[in-house]
Image 1 (spheres, each protein chain N blue to C red):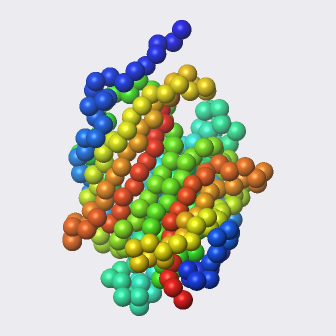
Image 2 (image 1 turned 60 degrees about the vertical axis):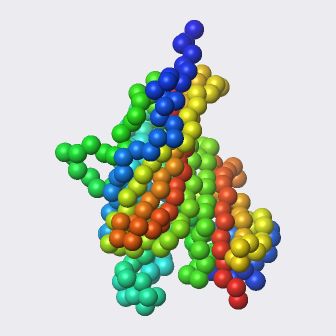
Image 3 (image 1 turned 180 degrees about the horizontal axis):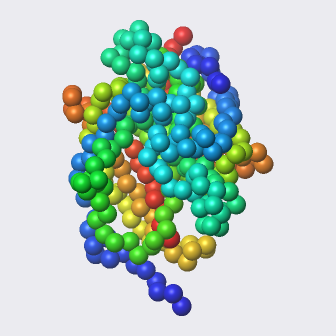
Amino acid sequence: MPSAQTWDAVSEGQEFELVEASDSQRLVIWAAASGDFYQIHYDDNFAKNNKLPDIIVHGALKGMWVGKLLDEIAGDNGWVKQWDVSYRGMDIAREDVTIFGKITKKYEQGGEHLVDLEVGVRRKDGSVSTPGTGTLRLAKK
Amino acid sequence: MADVMELTPEMKAAVGKPGEPTLYEVTSLGIRTFARAVGYKNPVYFDDDAAKAKGFPAIQAPPGYLGMPVWNPNKPSGRQATFESPFKRNLNGGTAVEPLERVFAGDVLEAVTSLTSLEIVPSAAFGQMMIRVSETVYTRKSDGKVVAKTRGTGLSY
């Protein structure tokens, strides 16, 4: 889990990661949290009858894992200003995925201390299913 | 050869037109379930005392959690389709979130969604695909503040 960062302490190119499990129980909890009850995410037979190899991870959950990574970097004294992700591919459930962020720009704007990041969800084989970007306001030391 | 679909006048007219407001309730149960599903550990998302120690009125919603629409099987959702899509299968193409204010348990948000762009494009996999981009603005009922904006991309084929 990344620890909260201050603007002074981070640098362009710095990377952060966290690993998330995608077991069926977690997908069911997400279904309850999000209201997305489409059965391809928790019903093995339904998924297979829809030509999927197994149940798949909700796209929105992947997006919110990216939000969590950003929130943990920002900490209680920072702020997640925005993030966006594109769901370019399915992630089969029951496999761990890595949520990553890399600082691409560190700057001041309008009195705020900001960093831009390249973010995403990476599969075990190294491919990125869910690329995106984010911007954080970080606390000064 | 399959028919080539084009945007109808009805579809074009839907772009830029805000939908009916939908109420979203932000409850402590909803926040905790969301935070548990995403895997948060920060106590301000779970523990009333930790949240109050930070000066918050109640547990805070993690970024991206904007409550759940009020479910009533006897009333239509505010997010009714404004046109009939010729494509029957849908995929979530992407999400963008812009948190603007802290959101807490007990907040009631009014969400208004506008379709900002709509196009039908060639698709190697499906022949054609419809791409819809919509933006939703969430306003807290108690103080009138816009607390977040989101953008969603929907793919239909």
